Length: 268
Image (cartoon, rainbow, N blue to C red):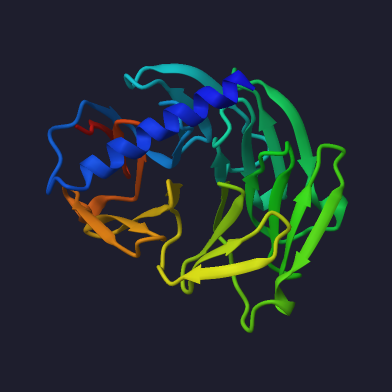
């Protein structure tokens, strides 16, 4: 309980940093530059950065940009998604083999879930859930599913009965008792904790963050924060946008991923 409270408090600090950062037109020189090729990065809300290198090696870096943990799993194919929203229960998704691997805070393997055993063969995205389960979206069936650790399907939500068009979710995250899922062509969809459709925000993006009623996403040349209550939008220009592949904000840090390097900035 106290660990989760600490995470929430740190996320609140992150929110203040993000809002301040958006009032500034540009960023200062990077705090640190990590030079290597990478495919994916994410953050966990407590200052850690997770990076998958081209050789499928997963490395965790602390807030100072120093590596402190490594996970190496080559035989299961390429890691296609990391969900570190809960740093005590990190999910890795191997789309090619339809596998979900659960790691603990030491990046030690706890569980391996074979989605094919549940009759799922075309899951495109997964997301951690606060109740200890995880979400999966099966594009072939057009359903959102909640899967527990047995593993078994706790429930499924057929989106074809709620939406008048097909969707392809490439990225999902659960936050603030809601699930958000991104289709790169039609926007970010919002669902309740039972998978019932709520609304859609028509922002074409593959990845985003949800922080204090704000959808934060990268759309070259700006990092954009859209407040879903006030409907206000703030933009922040980032350096050399033509080579940016991913952007994330976390606490007082800005992370920019390019093909051959990662840059860590301090937000003031």
